[in-house]
Image (cartoon, rainbow, N blue to C red; front, side, top):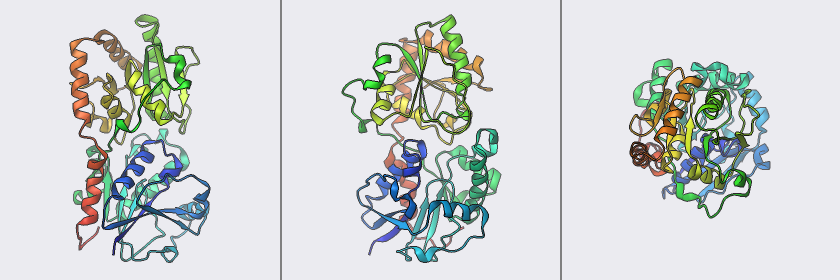
Length: 377
């Protein structure tokens, strides 16, 4: 009989193009290959209206409860065990890929794994939406206290959990996200991007929200076009998140909003350079993607980005990550274009990026699932 593993699949429908959505989808894809495990995606009845990606080797189970009701219970009520609603009460594992395990499911047979991606809400609470701030403060504390095992996408976040929540190091495992640039083949310029096809452009790719530091990037870019590179454009691609981000309404700055996988791949292949001045990251997947596509990278050295960005593979934006520091590195990007120094950085970055695969990302989970444990927390 196969070992039943439940996976909270909400990230697949909440924001599938964001980093956590991609991470969840690829993790499930890898776990579904295990011959002795049955992977069941756990959703609520009200989630049926959303399209769930088809992942071979998985089943979907819908709890007979509305997600909004569940959310209200989570926030304001005493936890009530709803485990009797599950079809597989003999499940051995429940994986929560998005910060918080549910306080409403308590299976005696099951151990829990919760993925905590970052602690931005502790370091930069002003960049987090108030309702999410409330949830994260409550959910992460609960998860650190009750989960049998914790997974983080970086050593930085693992240290953060130990320092801020007193989590024992043996409960925390590292699972770096991966990337496979072969998934999307580029045969031509996507129609929506034809207007920038013949223009050199810098690319920012990620959720458009305050902690990404896009306002400071725009200030630096406008200074660059006024002094060094008047024909260059800046392309800001990504879904709008929470919070107001001031992006100047000028011809040289192109905002695309959400992009398809084909558009994303084309942008990464075609950009003059990739710029990522983020204030705080759990990992920084777009940076690694740009490196895999052999593009020159300018990025901040904030938080976990230090584990990707090095002096020999990128141009590093130093603290305090303001427009002046960004501008100086953009100037270096222009000055180094096509030089042996730039080519060495690109080659080093590409080599470094090769270790980030989805197979490697899933391995810490697989080791937990396949190793017998006699104790939990």
